[in-house]
Image 1: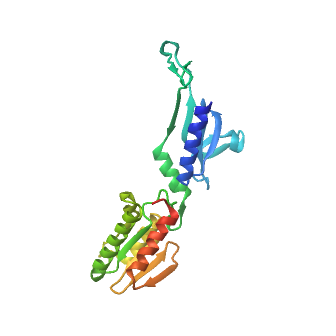
Image 2 (image 1 turned 135 degrees about the horizontal axis):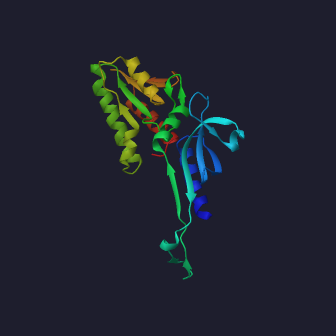
Image 3 (image 1 turned 135 degrees about the vertical axis):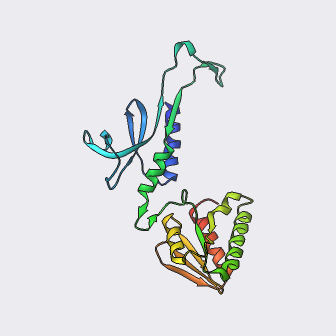
Length: 231
């Protein structure tokens, strides 16, 4: 009914926002709709029969959610007054999503040779600031604080926006190792801070720019965040 369609639309939109490609099977396993992630390459997953994918053959996939309705027991029959002042029975509808499987499938769908190229809606950070050495730490902290304050102001006080940027101040860890870790968790931009400037590098290794100006680096990070996710 309408209730099932409403919840189905909400779930499909949620999966899309997570960057998770989903296949839906209707009237499957006793559910109105069941949602599957199809493993590609098919090197893992459960061996399932999904008529909408491969008929009676088996497909490597994970079931990550379902939605269904069920009849009301006679002894617990409920009624309410609708907007026309008529008695009406509510529809009993439920749904479920496995957060653990969803996270696993997101990582499977977006892995590459550098780690995980995660979509903006689920990646931890939009940028990581990396001081090159002890002498550059103060400059990095200043840039980090400026970006957080600018994001807070640009979003009208949304404190969550400040968390889109991280400061990796592990000075004793080599710069290249810190950059690789940022790339591994899906960060699209790293900013290495030196005593005399800022070098910005995209996740694919492309050098975006090198600038002595703090404001230029800050605008680049804030612009990236604004373009890729709602602040």
